[in-house]
Amino acid sequence: MTAPVRENLSGLDLRAEIERLRKERNAVILAHYYQKPEIQDLADFVGDSLELSRKAADTDADVIAFCGVKFMAETAKILSPQKTVILPDMDAGCSLEDSCPPEQFARFRAQHPDHIALTYINCSAAVKALSDIIVTSSSAETIISQIPESQKIIFGPDRHLGGYLNRKFGRDMLLWPGVCIVHEAFSETELLKLKAQHPGAPVAAHPECPPHIVDHADYVGSTSGILQFAKSFPGDTLIVATEPHIIHQMELALPEKTFIGAPGADGNCNCNICPYMALNTMEKLYLALRDLKPRIEMDEELRLAARKSLDRMLEMASGTVGKGDLGRA
Ligand code: 13P
Ligand code: SF4
Image 1 (tube, rainbow, N blue to C red):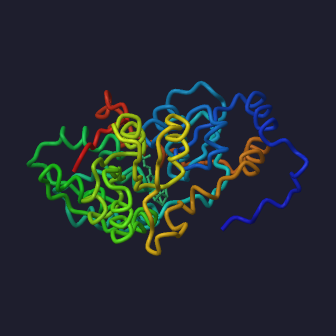
Image 2: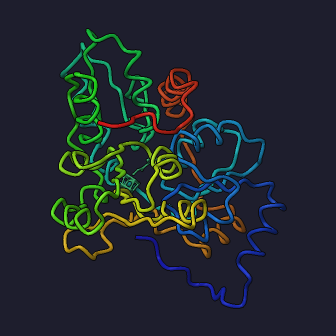
Image 3: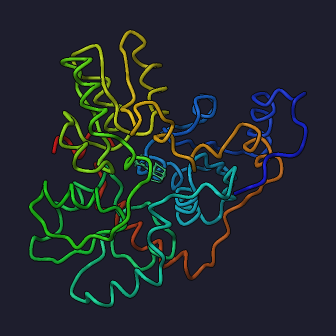
């Protein structure tokens, strides 16, 4: 893991300094919904993986400060190679990316030459380069519905998202056995206890959750889809089965409603906080903008190979607005 920030920044007004550097650098700050509230609050744009990819492709800033995880910042670099892309902590990885080393993925593909590879964006640039089409949780449904039923598909690296899509679309995609450690940690027993304490409160779940959680959900969708559902459900209490930092946006938009994070195994752990997303801090964002590092660098051949499958996603997902695209199971 990255060493803690060693400089003494205690006398600095970090928010003001970040503001100053953002202007000086002509930087745009992009943040995922799983970032700490103070980072979400100062970002130019907060969104899900698809929305953040589109913003990264469109921006005319010189610097993209990506407050998310490494595969997201890499996606920004693939789509905007002329920009300087910084990630406050280069150790902000993802358990799904880790589960899918490119050499093993290449072997798996070679064993199934008649399959195309539909791959979740939570993977390395090298795995994107080995894939045919990338999907995010908000574009997966739109994209899969454009692929003929006779076409055989490998889906990786998230077996829960792949399994969910298989069930919903009646497909039999071959699944890579990766999981998100955060969504895997929700407890069905604790969720049922919580539902009993809040009768009538709907459950909104991310499709990275295992089936024993998704089966109790009234709504299943991407982070932006869940946020949209929070804005439209008729009741006053919602149980949220995804990384709990998204609740910040719900509370900002709907202060009169109650949002409860779904519990982990002991009913009271922090295991649903993404440890990778949590590595980004205000201090590290300030230093990254000041020093323009840690910086995403990428071999041009790899970038061009990875770009093909990402461009395919952006073409096929056009019209997908990143909201509720997966809908109910
Ligand atoms: P979204 O595309 O739904 O924001 O998901 C990203 C992610 O990493 C969820 O764990
Ligand atoms: Fe990866 Fe899960 Fe963290 Fe999302 S929440 S970045 S899938 S480890």
